[in-house]
Image 1 (tube, rainbow, N blue to C red):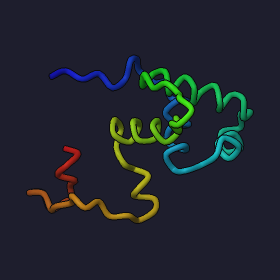
Image 2 (image 1 turned 90 degrees about the vertical axis):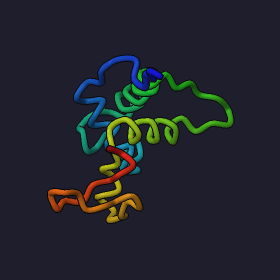
Image 3 (image 1 turned 120 degrees about the vertical axis):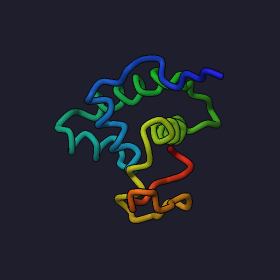
Length: 103
């Protein structure tokens, strides 16, 4: 089965905003870190949601879905920052830890 997660490639700025969002930062905090306005961040998050073909609904938190989609597609680097060990880690043949679920 061929599954398309992204409808287009993300820009470097969209990646930056996506990573900050996955770190749990608010739009205001992302705006400060990137030296942009909150409106620019809001628009970027909207474009990210469209790139992942996510649609908002009254009972759905689009940021949560977007963070899940981003992490699923690009990896769980946010967990490294908060020292949460992946429950799927094993030692590979080269002696490095690898996640057997996200290979």
